[in-house]
Image 1 (cartoon, each protein chain N blue to C red):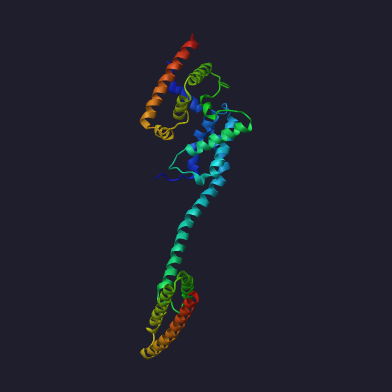
Image 2: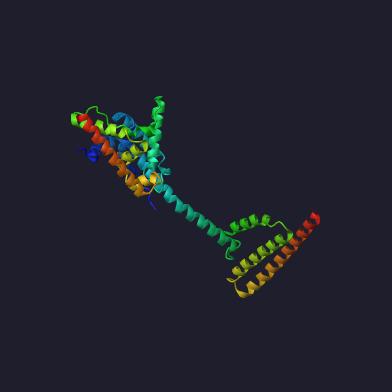
Length: 170
Length: 154
């Protein structure tokens, strides 16, 4: 049985993940991401009695994060599909190195060629830092199936990136 | 060669929250988190306390109700009488009520026996006789009431 952690432990375990999730969905604007992340953790603390680590390690706070983002866009009267925003990568703003900028654009374009589900897997594994086991639980699939699928998507993504970078080099 | 994993790692690194933000947010949350922690501990501590209180009150109630040592003059005797008073209306039929009254009488008898054990033999005998007489009178009075009630019901 998973023991309910102290809020500090819970905070340390989930802060980076929640922040990144928000960051990619607010156009990589640091201030907005920080404000929303603060709001999410304040809500989480208020409702911490209802947190059950048996059911999910971080799905609970990710649901709060998702709802907070939906409210954020609703208040701004913007119609945005929060789940579809996973392909937004850190913008090219403020990037000094041209090469780095190009690679980032290539990656961004390559991610845009993937389906929403494929992007979600890449985001969970490589950007939010989920383990295969946690991903499998979240998606109600076996760990082996998720692992295989992620490898296949990575292979596909790599091929697209190579092709895009070759084309941009020409 | 395109190093995909390295690119993804860079993206991950560049999208991390700053340590200043982490610190500030925790400072904002900390007072409430500490309060929450204390509340949780208090709540957890109250569970065994309530369980113990319930256990003790049930135990005391059972002891008071069943033990012949709890007789007139004992601090728990009032509780015993209260429990009997609560039980009395539960026996609706005249037979059940008579049975209950008989049980109460035998309980009183057992209490008396218990008290008499500490007295000298001659006084003990005298007390026993007096008690039997009193009980007999009570039983007769109760029988009269039951007969009257059944006549009214008929």
